[in-house]
Image 1 (tube, helix red, strand yellow):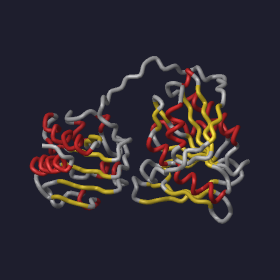
Image 2: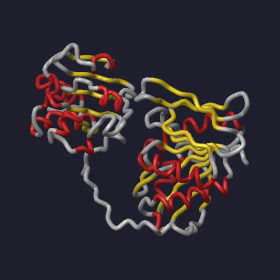
Image 3: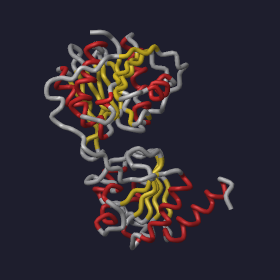
Image 4: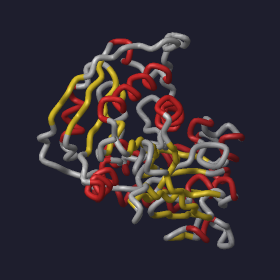
Length: 329
């Protein structure tokens, strides 16, 4: 087993997921402790632009597995491809981002290569014995547990998005193609259609900034003020479960325990009281701003900044001020 750290650089349509780039930061810190290199693995079709993007993070090597059958994500084919990269590099540690793809792929690969696995981690280090120690949130983020992955076999960990910054490097990574060889059973599932439902609006799991609305918006039409603010901030639009259940927004935008867990750099909660299930999905945000007329709302207990005012006055005013900063009318 080598001392290298392998990073799965998730991409779609030759564009690397931001969370995958962030994962290079802990990979570099671990590689400095193990004395190995940081190797990125790209899986898909084409991959020229994606490889160039990954190279700018300062990785040492890039393994590209390009084939037309890998153009769209397939759990079985990507498992086979990543397992092949692991067999080639024989890394000590493998890191993925804890996106939908990463969460689906990591356990499949761990079983295939006989690796230890920890998911949704927020801290990683090499302990005195040379094993990988990770920290991951439990009980809806109310506590953390420490997990030690044994040194004698590969250690796989998926890293929570927006936990680490994207590094910058010189872009001199060597690039090595690896042919894809399908394994038995890889064709059991076929993608017949890909339906994109989010349009041009960012998905809440991929955004650095999220503006969320609650039931206090009263109807779908009033969500326009949320979209206006999100547009000025280049943000995603989220919603509470109550707002989604009421039909104000689709459930694809729901943030919370029964929706999507998010960790943006900035989370603005508008008219959201802060039910336990909602807090569980966004309490990991770097900075939280709450706008609510109820001064006793639970959301204020986790907020870094609170505005106890009517959201229908505050949100448009905030949008207007940001527009002025951008040089708008």
